[in-house]
Length: 157
Image (cartoon, rainbow, N blue to C red; front, side, top):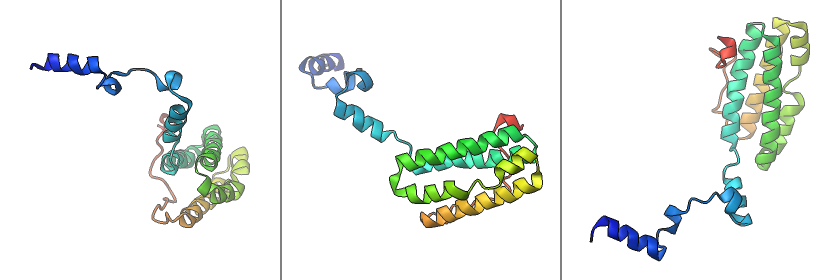
């Protein structure tokens, strides 16, 4: 039997339906299927922390370069990421809420005043709060540099 004939027989009998089913689960799936797929794509803590790391680096270099509006933007985005973590990873909510309460202390004044010295103090405070959170979540091995080597945004080139 040649391969084309085998494929025709399999298609005719419905034995390869899953492989040829091109329907969009978002529109044609059952409620259960949609819910299962949405839950599977919820960002993990690692996904969110990767984004936090990028923001952390960009925050430092925005302040270092005096790009104060960009620095403010980074703090706002970091705040949103932690809020997302609270929703998507409820077992991390307590430490994330503690982090939100005090990790960003000093940034508003430092950024408003465009003061590098105040900024570095606020940044170090935030780094310490990050490390405390990592320790509480059994990720002490994730150590943050006090002075990230470079930013990752083209805004900082």
